[in-house]
Image 1 (tube, helix red, strand yellow):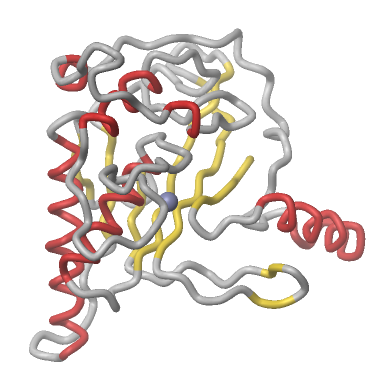
Image 2: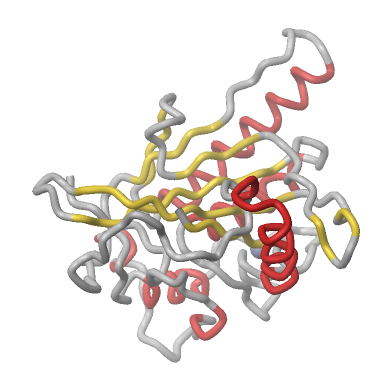
Length: 254
Ligand SMILES: [Zn+2]
């Protein structure tokens, strides 16, 4: 499996740390969150494939140059761009767990509503479906602060959000080797509703394959904090359109 994260990532430092720790601890860290190793035990899939654009995305793309895009800032994984090829993408939302009537339950209800809104926002352009089956979900959204990381010789500052992906070797319906991926989004429930929705929309954009940041604050994938978080922009959509036209090794039929 290969796993990487965005928004609180420092891949090179993480990698260096992991290499040092791996030398010291042998296989104890093989399940670490910041591994950048090739998928192990997997035969290489036959080759890169390109998939058709979902109709609802194709319908809203503008000719390039009209609104522009920031595709140059989107990074592929070692196995290709992190696009989905089987629709609808299954999204799991961590359910509320607090006792009804408590402040925690209220916070969790706000988080749930904003997460559902963020899913609805992206569903206008890519087919998404919520599922109760966490194990089978393509995207898992957890109501948790991102796990702390080791950075620069110390534990990292706590952050609001982070998205991580993992590459999973598998076999398709015909028994051929293939690679699936899975995205895990961490967003705590300590922000206000508007910021929370903006954060969830941004992280879900990463989980849908926009693995990078826009330099423009009008885009959802802008990296900075915005007082009034933007709606999904034409530039976000044009970037998504370019992304989903790229070849990738990821994807299993069936
Ligand atoms: Zn981000």
